[in-house]
Length: 138
Image (cartoon, rainbow, N blue to C red; front, side):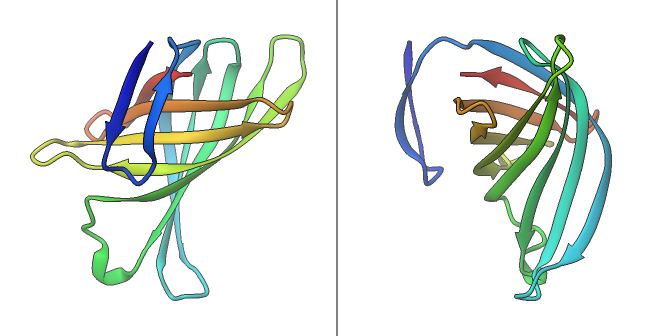
């Protein structure tokens, strides 16, 4: 068990050992605007996650056009896992992303509500060169 505390707007959490890992590859983006006139980005991924099998999902964020080069912000996750027993598990999450200075990646932390009532936390990063999103599930 370890403690993580970072200025991510989430606070201090005690996190148990990881219960799984994920590796997702980028498959495309969709851009638009919201009612406030902000630029929205929907980033689509698919891949595998321990205990979940095949996973499809979308990271959604928005920023004012003038903040296109932001180095942190809020993010949402909406996705589905296609379990080995043939059932589908949905997930909706919220969290934050940040881009470390002089690095070509984004770090993400999200709290995710699953359709079976469970709550999980994911911590991972997107390598902006390979476009692979990897991380751990708690």
